[in-house]
Image (cartoon, rainbow, N blue to C red; front, side, top):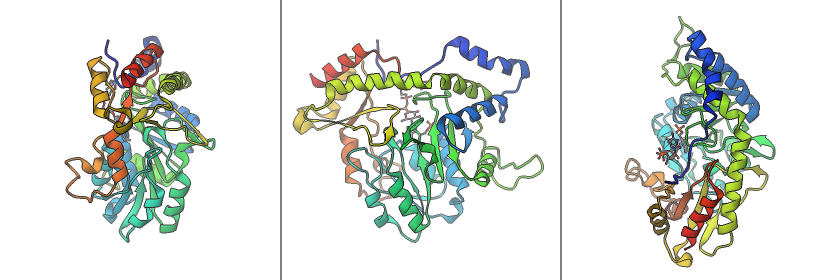
Length: 366
Ligand code: T4K
């Protein structure tokens, strides 16, 4: 049987049926209904954030989070990382803003704060870093730079559900943080996403943006879209949230088994457990150095595929090398380029058998 890079975590059918039963009684399916509200409260509690707005997916959440910061009309520049899923950059450009790509650190692959300040100009309005693979950015250094230069910070925390830094939920940093609840994530609502934030006025703006710009039925102060999370997805969220600790624990066991095989192997670099961070084991990224290992990342990818095991090149190419961006922006992010050429994310999900991890590692090391 195929082993794919991940597999959605799901509750039992009975649990889900139980949770959606009230929808069949009330016929209330969307537009911030009672299940949405219950789920929102539970999430705020779990993620330890003061405010939260739920969206139809992570991408629309990020797009609207940037819009709600009031940056769109300024037409300015946003410092961001090219080492991410393309959604991050699209959310910036679709707001009429210009991405300025900053290189990453070579240990945890997050944006390098030491390289941010030299990219700041009088047009810079924000920093949009990514907690890539659930590795937490240097939030303290980033906030210091933002405060010094009067910049907004909106995190792409798509991979960082449930992660804590020094005991604080990661959604508490910056002006806003986006979590993705896509089927491929540690925690899912099938499709879905959310923005964590602190400022209530910002929350009102977010709510209007995701509901056609409507403030109330007779007052439409701005132009919005439609990005509300519906009741069926919120119900899936409630069910999955009940099991989140089990899901993360199971992933931890998978990560530990990989570590047993791959740690200290010359030519293989793993992400180290970050200090003061409680991990969620969202991905298992491996950097392959062909000069030492004797085979390239692409060879490993193909060998696994020949055994019907489908690792992924998350994230290749780097976003600033994608056709839609590469001729418009300077290519001055050598570490992001290098990492994108050498990395593979190995299969990682709750339910992946440890014997399968052994088999994957035998192929990788063979
Ligand atoms: N920012 C960052 C940093 C992100 O990584 C993402 C999304 C976003 C923003 C935007 O958030 P969302 O709008 O998506 O909420 C996937 C996901 O679609 C995407 O959510 C994710 N990042 C990205 C890294 O990966 P694909 O095209 O690689 O997914 P796909 O369809 O190839 O699925 C991968 C594997 O997952 C499959 O081989 C099997 C498994 N799978 C997939 C689906 C769809 C399941 O087990 N169940 C499923 O329903 O993009």
